[in-house]
Amino acid sequence: MTEIGSISPEFCAGKLKPLADATRLAILELLLGSPKHVSEMNAVLGLEQSLLSHHLKVLREAGLVRSQRDGKAVLYTLAEGVRHTETGTAIDLGCCQLVIGNG
Image (tube, rainbow, N blue to C red):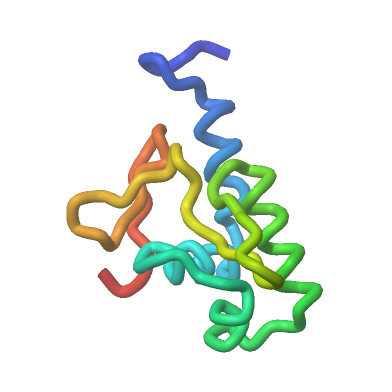
């Protein structure tokens, strides 16, 4: 497949596919404001721990979030390649910008 500029359609699809889920979008929206521990996200989302872990794993594997140990807890942030836009209501995925939340 041909590349559009310097970004291939496969790259874009790889970033967007994991975001075709409302829970994963909600996780990114939470992380737009600041890094969050798993327990903080779960207090807002109200998911089973295993389901939240699954969604976080999908986002990590897609390179959209990163995790780091913080004592006994795990702290999540947006990945380095995923940037906030100037308005703070959208993220730049490198292939497109995605508006998250109510704007």
